[in-house]
Image (tube, rainbow, N blue to C red; front, top):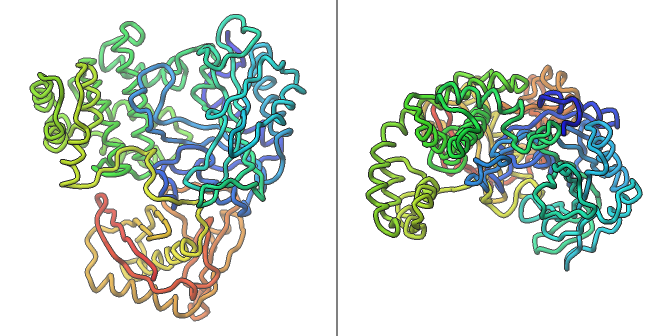
Length: 593
């Protein structure tokens, strides 16, 4: 059954944004897939991720009602990609109330959009609500609101684990959620069964009414928030009557390109269809990662990117593709997602990185596969052999495990880990947290590090040259990490000059002033913006006032915070490490004492 006359992702996104703007929501741009200043995850995994400071009470320049479509990366279930519905990259429709409207208005708007705008019939509609547990009470309030909209009790299910969200890190805002479902069969049964796969989730309203503290205790939130999320890919498939997301207009141009290169037909043979889905998903995700500054590597985000590219290449071999093809697929992604200007802007970088990685892996893939076959002749693959495949032939451990599963043998992961520890610490997935706190942490130490990052940014420009630009940052209570463009290793004298300049500005006890202004005014005033970041029409600008300067300030940046209100509160700054992270990109790690 085809519902609304919406065929493309652009049409769906426009319908969504227009609807919520008509309800008083300000439209915010998608943030990077690389989170700013949040060490708890490697990638932006949900639309709310960039909004954590505002969910905690900080004022947003566009007000208390917001909406957007956010590009996201989730890698917790990479092995599931290849079926009809799983993706590593996806777009999330989102709308928020930052202490403004609450459950009644949120649920009514969601229902109106899904049934009136998208045309989902109410006789094929069902929802879930939170059943309650030791930390929070049953959400009967939401159920009553759904009933008032005409939904029968038989179409409302109460669940525990599936209907509790958050927090994003170890602490922060969280609460129950109410999910919406559409029945993909001909006639929906009277009673809703969440385990019936014909009921497809189309959206989720998170009702943030609690805050989890450092001790693991839940408290009623001072600011109660609404956070709706709905996947673009899944929603479009539902609207177009597909139970396979890869049949939508989102993926078909990419699939057609894979068919052209491989000479195979999507949907004809199960294994080949799975391979095409994996290639389409992984190269789409890789293009967005590289477009936001990630480069293939052996740790953290770079490792995840490398794993996706190499998994796509291996499945390309299964389709009989013997030429370089990843850049050709990425070109289709860049063309189809022309509303993300960062893809076109970084076109050469995306294509070059993919081609380089493909050349590098192709040199060892065939030999590595022959070695794997030798190791796989027994009942298991030792940790030492698995590490050899990784170290010498570039096989990510997950790839070795996947190949081993196909032969129904096991891999000694513990042994692999022991071998790996001898060489380097490997960060495996984007879902694994690096530190205990992130954006939800507004401690004094974090504020100091945020503020000193602004001093460091300007000090680098003055010591190394005005062409230096911030390429990313990551802050936790223990240290700051700051990436910037520079072509060579810093000399000891340069590091010393940077430290001295920063510490002098700390000693001068300069005021840190926060202002709200239009983005254009902020840029015209000389405020620095992070490379690759997108900003709303109104932004916050933090100025480190210095009346000795001709312009009246030492540093001026567009930022969300949190910050100290005076540099004198920071303490002594020290650079503990300076290193290369990619071609032309350097990284400084620093602390305050």
